[in-house]
Image 1 (cartoon, rainbow, N blue to C red):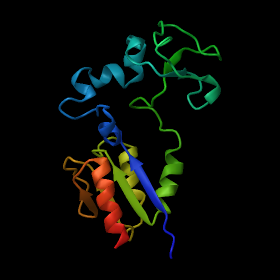
Image 2: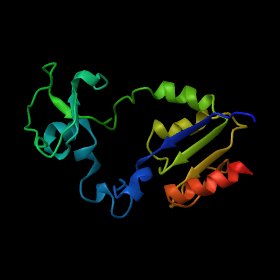
Image 3: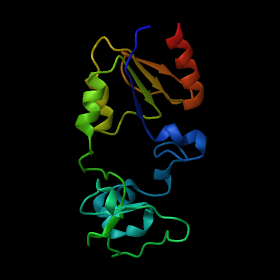
Image 4: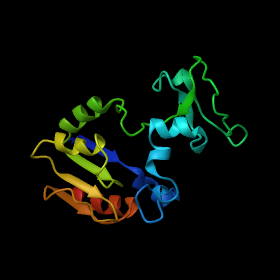
Length: 174
């Protein structure tokens, strides 16, 4: 049996079946908050109380300075400092910031024998650009219940993550 390297790229839609909202759907998170207030560095500086998982603002990737909040300590006062002395900030990549390990992800996609994309509209870059690193001969499957304009190369399974993965598994076993 020939082993194949399958690389999976997931987006916010991957978690919909678990009860988490996406960003762009009709009832998504952007309906309650403008993107500029919750997903940019400037928005965080203006109102740091909108996000609850935090880390050091100096070194986002250093696990020593990441703090997971619990119901007992989920209120972070503006100006609260991390262990390294910098301000605590949301443990996310803001729009306009570099994506950690994006070059590593691109290398993985280049080596893929099959690329699977689940739960994303493919409109947020640079993550959406990872699709273009797949070799031309590599099959690309996109699982999302909403239509996604990903080009003719991509075979879309228009279902939620669980049902879509079942269908993909059946396709790949043939």
